Amino acid sequence: MRALIACLLIASPAWADCPAPPDHSDDLDALIAEARAAETEAEGQRISNEMWRHWADAPDEAAQALLDRGMAARRVYDLLAAHEAFDRLVAYCPDYAEGYNQRAFIAFLQQDYAAALPDLEAALEINPRHVAALSGKALTLFGLGRTEAARETLRAALALNPWLSERHLLDAAPGTPL
View 1 (cartoon, helix red, strand yellow):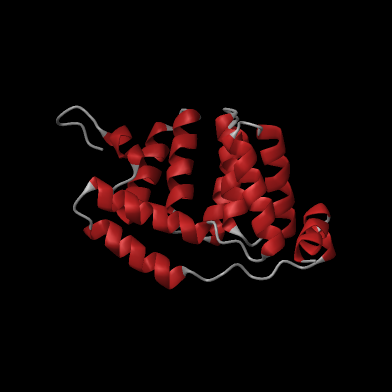
View 2 (cartoon, one colour):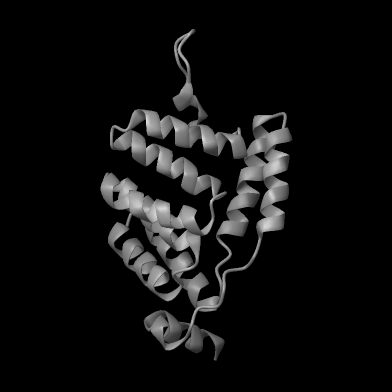
């Protein structure tokens, strides 16, 4: 019966109101502090993975099903199906940052940086400390040729998690300010 209800909600999430996203702010604050204090790449990666576990915790079963469906479609490069799932997720749960972040990632993969940027900004408006959305915004700004804004955004992401793989993008010649 639960599966049937979830299928009906996925088919038409407008039938129900999306509840507020889970509040993981205390856990994420602790993880950010751990990331800043981490001493190894492996430890930093473990912490980053734990952050993802919180961001990918959707507000309810229907939202989780849409998120999971979109992420599964993206993993096999069915970007059309992924985009559709994330469109539905954003429409159903407009206060859930990860819906916007995932939809932005699809646009980024398609090199449609202009479409990715507003979704990243929406995700960051909801959750300003969403490290993945910040690093995604930096990559998107690089894609748009807005190098200085990209570096500034990446610095903000690295201030929260210095172990991001994108950190190498700030490498510069000796004497060149980052």
